[in-house]
Length: 81
Image (cartoon, rainbow, N blue to C red; front, side, top):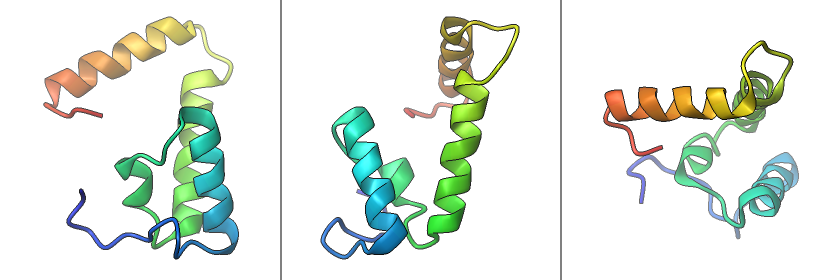
C-alpha cells in the first residue's frame, strides 16, 4: 500500500475511472504505480502515453530488448516495478 493519498476504485470518476478500467483490462488490476498518480489524471494519462511510446513505439530496439533494459535498470535502482 502506498503512503501517498490515492483515489480508490470506488471514488474514481470520469477520466480517472476510464484510466483505471483500461489498466484492469491490460493487466487484470490497477498497480500502485498507477494509483500514485490518481490525484492528477492528466499526469497519469501522460505517463501512460510516454510508457506506451517508449515500450511499443517505433524503435531500433525490439520489445524484448526494451523490457530487458527496464528490468536491468529496475534491479540496479532496487525498484521492484
